[in-house]
Amino acid sequence: MRRKTKAKRVLDPGNEEEKQQDEEEGGEEEGTEESDYLLSRSKSELIAMVLCMQREMEGLREQIRCLTACGKLARNIEALIEKTQTWASGDDSMPAALDMQGVQTGGQQALTPAATPAAAVVQQASPREGILTEPESQRKRLYVLPEYITQDLLDNCNTTATAQKLTNDLLRGLYERECLASHSISGIVYNKKGSPKPALPADEVQTVLRTVQHFFPGKTDAEIKGYIRQKLQNEAKRLRRKPQPPEIKDS
Image 1 (cartoon, one colour):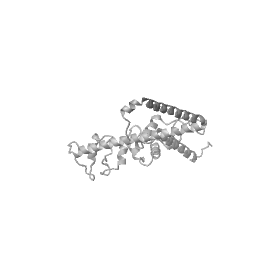
Image 2 (image 1 turned 45 degrees about the vertical axis):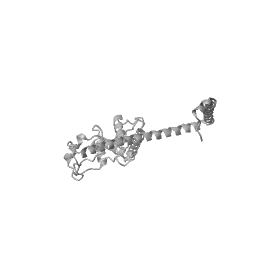
Image 3 (image 1 turned 120 degrees about the horizontal axis):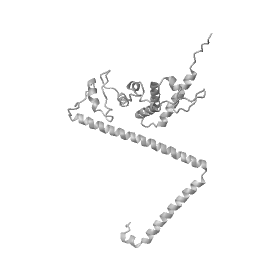
Image 4 (image 1 turned 90 degrees about the vertical axis):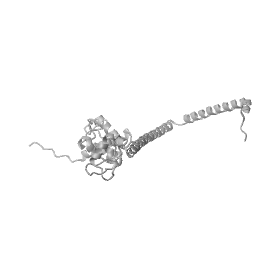
């Protein structure tokens, strides 16, 4: 089929205007149909549609967070590859080759100043065994906040199972069980006597949130706070079931 030449298009300007006008009228009709469709729906149906759209938006936000975490991981891997290539090129400031079976503790000290969060996935030496530890242990060393989260606390936490398991381990390491049972996350929860439970320190709660999100980037603040709230409730129930010592009456 022959294409319409430029000259023919110039000779038929009226047809072009009619087509454009038809398209505009068609768009107006579609908009009218959509508005009529919305007006014909009940209030409950519209609310359900809005809630469904909100859930879809939350799902999209979660996907964006996951993609952002994947992008950071990709940049970390690129930085690690660059450092590995630098070491392999024979740079005097770094060992040309790493012996995977006989790395000594001193080697860890030599690598530590040059290690960055991007390249910290490289396995380091274990002072106890003299061999390379698991990558999971090295990832723990990336996130140590001396004021709250210590290295000993992270070593006793399971950072690979689930976000809820890690949250529970952090709470057990930071607080006594009686303290968890007598506190809340918001400060507006009431105990059996009708008095409000004090809230956990906000900065410590934020530290738990950031730590869990470091190991599980896809988790939101609301999800992790739900884990904390559930842990506090479970400890309160356990304390209520615990038999109380008999009161000693004065003779």
